[in-house]
Length: 253
Image (cartoon, rainbow, N blue to C red; front, side, top):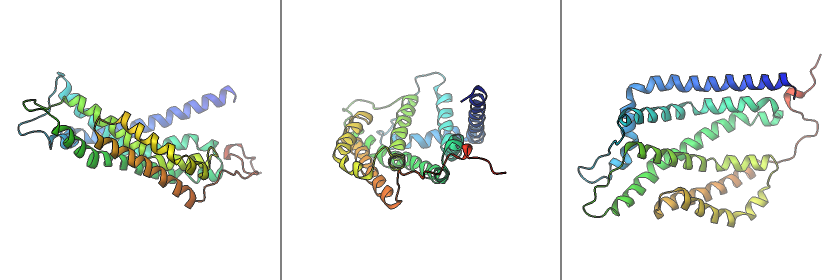
């Protein structure tokens, strides 16, 4: 790769990053008037299990202003995620083979849906159960409250964990497609994956059994779903010999 080509790639990367940032900014500005409502909605799973009279607190002077802004930015990223993923895929598309390019839009759509599904699973299933279990362990006379910034950091981490977890089927299909592994090898690795799922869940989730099980079982089931999808789609790692990346194909007169 010569210097001119390298610079052109950097320019394209910059342009696509700016497009993504602009999209997030536009959505953020539109959502800004409802920043407080968005945080209240995010905090609802915890507020629902706090004892009567319990509330969240803000230990930072500017926390009551910055935290709702962070939540609004998170929602803006969620809304624009399909566009952001498309920009990422479009950047790498010129180096892909023609048959690989046909996978771009389905992968962008599927990746977005699965990531948002993981976040929804965390919000609607994991948080209510986990917070209810944790609240039951609060000793008598102890006011169980949390700082709003710490709560946001916690849920953000859980959103990322479960969002990435739900991407496992896509990752499995890509690994098989690239020839890194075969479906048979994935099946043989099943026992190790199950053990690894419980280890990962124990490390990444709060120290309660409910949260760990709610991450470990989806990890395992999504792995199985990825194997099934790879079989159904007939994914193969074989590359047609005559096929070359689109940007390196000879031009026709």
